[in-house]
Length: 515
Image (tube, one colour):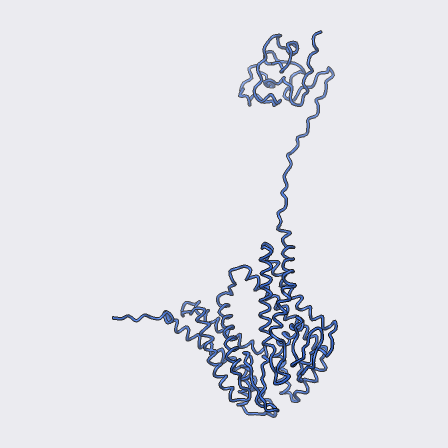
């Protein structure tokens, strides 16, 4: 009898969870496409002279939705009759599809927190959400083939899965708590790359905005010339808003030095605008610099990559105060490469063809922008990181320990000399007269002669008791230290051997030799 083994994919109801994730992906695609279709249909309804019916509006919405995913479109209704490609992605339109896929993958993995429903693995959730989304995208590609803006199949098969898969992976990463790599160098490099990239794009946006304000009259003339009715102007204004992130990327590429192309054979850099540009009438393109060499105002755009590189080097150096110099340099180098890769992707998405002929090259060149970003990071970011690390290590150096000096005991003052010429008694002899000795309790000093002993009250020829050990250095001890509890002579001030000279008392002079 054979037993049917259940596949691990369908154990514990995970097949239901994967099916739910696939449905979430399809709903995310439908929401993005539906929201864009509402805007396009509303613009078509408000237009007093619509060129096509509702089918044309829906085909336009489908084309814009595919363009937001990096898919090139092909315009068939050109004046020359030759199909012209359209590949400039409005980056603001790409935010909505990316966020919807991100949220679908995140919610799929968060659904298992309640414990009521099974939760698929991270890889399963990413594959299911992306699969459901791409099924809807394939249907939209087929639908656009019958309209005026059909999708290019090569870019649809390349960029659409890449964008959707990246957004789904980002959602799964968020659901897992945004874990960073285990190595500290990789985590620091990611954070520093994000800081540097944000600063670079912010500086590019400021540079582009200043240039657009400088050429405000030309931009206004181009805006008014595109449409006369209010509905057309609203549509142009929405397109301008959708292209504002592209403008920031163009400004960043301009400040990096790689610049951007304005038609085949024309390049705009801080050095100047070289070649013969082919610029269509559009408000944002009025911000392009004039032909000829660049001045100090054009060179001020270099401040954006300069600040971005210094900040990312500072971020690495501040975190690497306890690292070796080699690890710090490698981390700063990895940060530069990370920024370069993201800058190349953004530059490739922000540029592309606007038509055939001279308009086939428009915007930043992706590999030049990426290489310039890496070059800035290597030449300025790595030295900055090493310098900040060296500056921060000053506070980590061990300080010399303070060794307390031993307390110096002040030397005792010499004993005052009495009027009779004898030295005053030490404190241990308080209550006794100077030079007085108790009978039977005195001993002669070392080296004293019999005459000196008799002078001290000892009989000539008597042998003094030996001094206890430790008194050779002049140390005085009390009776309790010597184990003497009772004074045999009833004298409370009596101390054994208290007649011996103390360390601070001068020794008695030797007696004169008998003549």
